[in-house]
Image (cartoon, one colour):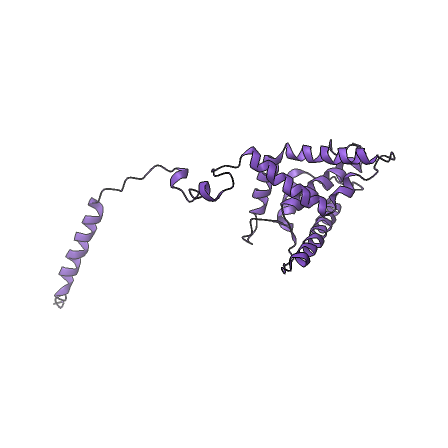
Length: 219
């Protein structure tokens, strides 16, 4: 005959059955409806500039004004005011055209910043404050920026544009770092101001240099 089971086995089995029965009999906890007020975003109403869950038009205008000024300091203005049509513009016309380009971007600020947030979130770096090269390439593809066999706006030109805009931003950042005495690490990525710079330069390459437009703000 088989040996009898250890004395503790029936006790352990009985305890397991009892615990299982208790688990089955427990009613499910009621789930509270999800809300922003109880989510991880709740503190944003306190620390956000607009003291709100969402960015207002006023906040976006302030952000655009700041980013635009940085793009101008990075050298964007010389590309806007360049003589593209052989008719050298006056100083007033240059200033007017620069303001018109700024207004064209400002009118699309919410779209531009939503685009920036999305492409800045791509990749594995965990840095949501800039657009890296791979994300930039995805943006170029999604936006259909490149023109095959273009003399000014094919994929190779847009790759070069990334380097040019990034370098311009790095020069300005280095100058600011020297002035402040704060050491900054360079990054091969676009901040928001560099993204504005890039969008204007793409418009120039795609529409102005290829002859479809003569007005940068319209491009």
